[in-house]
Length: 410
Ligand SMILES: [Zn+2]
Image (tube, rainbow, N blue to C red; front, top):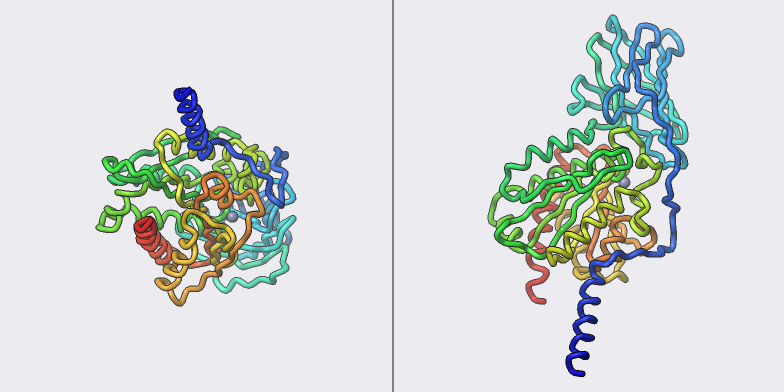
């Protein structure tokens, strides 16, 4: 009998222990249907409009049509992958002419108002804003002057960072001793590989984990830059990172929506779904594989997910945090961390926006699945890179400091 009771107790404990890692689904107050929807693919081609050429033949391009309206005005049509979709008309194309020409370009959107200041340059990584660009907030089209040359120039909503560029960035980090592992953990709808890498100290075998992610929403480049600078700060070998990686690992998913990124989508994956609404029923393969990977990896390594940070972009800097009714394992972190970053980047301002659990977004999944703290870290679209870098450095250093402290007296 004693043996039987002991067995029951053991079974109970195992069940409790496993429930931390068990697959959980949730009914949020604002459910969103994340079943597959059809998308429209843009035709990849070189458009010829009089003496001017435009092309969308590269990853992350978006140009649905290009035509000559009159002697000096040319129109670039920019459409979303499907509708309804939020107001984030992403555009990216190359333009050139047989002879240099001064002309006007009209970006014409359907299903959206203007969002991104157009940028241009010969190299897709180093783009400058179109000078003196102005627009009306309600505009569904914007016009600006442009000088074409024989050499193609990019015109784009933001710096163009494709999935391949992200793979190359990860490759460039691999020689760092804090990069313990780098691999693909699955595939997108169209078979693009989903990359992952793990930071830590091999000999430490740390049991506490921070998860970072980005590019659920393809055009959100300033958020992706923030993740890059954040990771690069974590990889600097100094007393703080040495201490931090004794206790913590950091798991990074830099591109959750590789199809959306390379197809130049405004928002969705190749099944026409906003992936950041699918973190309750896991209907989309990208979210299903990432959540399964995190749970399995945590269970097998007996690790605890402490914090999730999901990097995004919007019109201005915002911390989307849990409201104070939501008690995570480190509830104070949201206040202390954001206050510390704000102190270090003063006078740059960030809105602090607490939210209840309402939708199936990644932030809520970290709490619902693991009781973990989580934050959606939104960077403003047009924040200069030096500010993004300064803020990410402050964010990484403050996070390490606070996380080293938070469990000390527990
Ligand atoms: Zn976003």
